[in-house]
Length: 266
Image 1 (cartoon, rainbow, N blue to C red):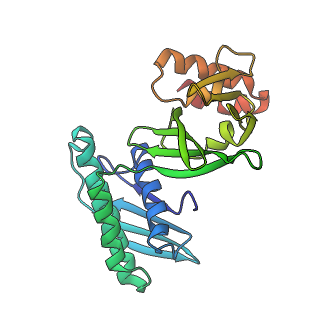
Image 2: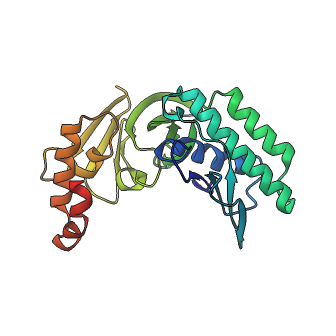
């Protein structure tokens, strides 16, 4: 499945946009495809206030919707469930508006998607990649992403002859999939007990020992910790993040580092 065909945004204070939308962006991207509602290559729904105009803009197979929906002054103080529920209402209203606009989306299936999300309490896990073992080994590693409001958790599930041998958390980071190939693009089986994951940035190797269901991260950089991998990792302290930010900037070519310096220091 395509990872992203849906995006939720907003314009204004106390509205639904921001990093927390990442989980619902991914959930809707997958469920629209599961329910055969992937008529568009990309859907962007944007919450607006009374000062802007509602509009539907269609560009080929892409569609953009501005929809008015009330903002709550205490939106940020609401519970996770309440914030997600408001986001879900904005999304559903926007999709219904599209369905009324060109009659291509099924209202019945949009309702089914919304009901599934509510019934599962916004809790989904999606299969995003496989690392098959050598021929005739009957072993495979499957990567599962668990999108949450504050982070994405990545698990590797090792199956042999369709039986789960191990399930282990390998990483928790920001609410997007864009960085996944940076660290976990390729999987190499050293033997049936050890899988090594590497990425396009070359910052680290992730070793998974199947018999022990254990993960070991091998740092391939000159720094104390892999800079970018650490910078976007969930749950680190501000001091750790600042150190990773400086190391990451130092690792870049001077021409690029000079351009991003103002943003890094802010």
